[in-house]
Length: 275
Image 1 (cartoon, rainbow, N blue to C red):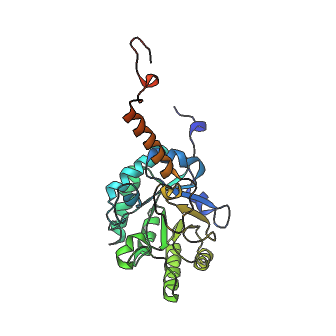
Image 2: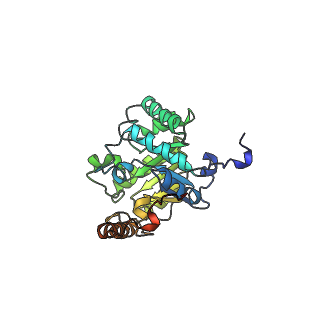
Image 3: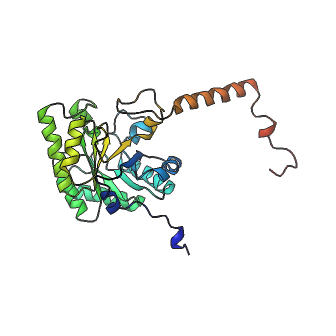
């Protein structure tokens, strides 16, 4: 029998909401068990984002991501984490039709992964679905501002809130998302003054990505932050150059293989040896 002392308690929804206006929330994306193990001790929230379509599967946008892909990666992240609250994106086309469709998708994802919350992008009617989900025990994180799933409608990944009409739309979506019971809200790709206004206008914590330090927390795509790609959005700060480190390591391996120096004695098995 596992004792209570050996069970590490995850960040809970009430604990997450209590961080509004307090200590900043540290959030990152995770798609695999090994990466989740690295991030979990230092993060409050791990998001299994539909960005995995681009980061892991090489898709041009997030539009082609399926429910099955989200479940597969969500299961992996849950196996690799014990402390952070794990949230999973509802992919494009899996929740927009009706609150009932959103519930079917969200409940399946939570049941099959064991994650604590789902995330949805704001759009017409989505606030109604958020209220439907939260009223039935499903915690929901909202997402306003730049909406990656609307890339075809918006004509690309463009910052939002640069016109008065856009500002009012983002603010309206944020207020509606908050009123519907969202436990937190990602604010992406907006001007600093709009991020400040959104954060002040809602009661749930805001999590910025390209939205200034005015938000209650921050999130980045982990692979962007670690420097794994040649290009990254303007709002990314590189904390490492893993692309360079990986290329150097592979070049060294290739050189050793071609020179016949790998494997060497240290990597070979010997007759009668026990290892």
